[in-house]
Length: 131
Picture 1 (cartoon, helix red, strand yellow):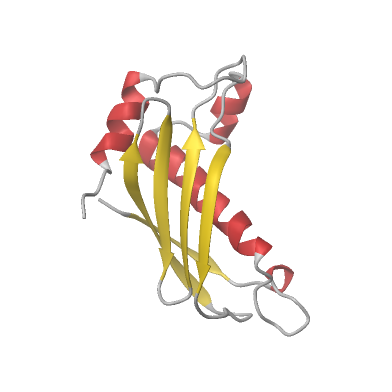
Picture 2 (cartoon, helix red, strand yellow):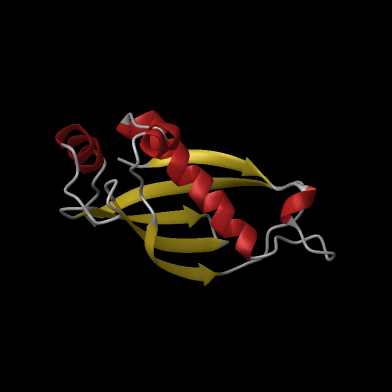
């Protein structure tokens, strides 16, 4: 089951040519992931931070296919590709513009990987897509 979210390209996302400056895509992807955790997994980044936990990035791959311009609306599609003992790999597609593959790791207060709590693991696994 995929998760979708829209992002309107704003002036602050763009370079002087009016196209998205590529690091801004990573900020948008982080926002999609943050909202996925809050809306679908049931744990917000605010709750994670308050408990001394989090899901930092371990790996990121990007395939840029076409530019995005000021005022356009991007439709992000997040798919869960793999759920590990303490990690999750997402694929984020933005139509013909961009494909990102990223891996996040569940860290405890000691800043070390910990197994997913049962409820989070179940929510992530429920979104797992097989191709």
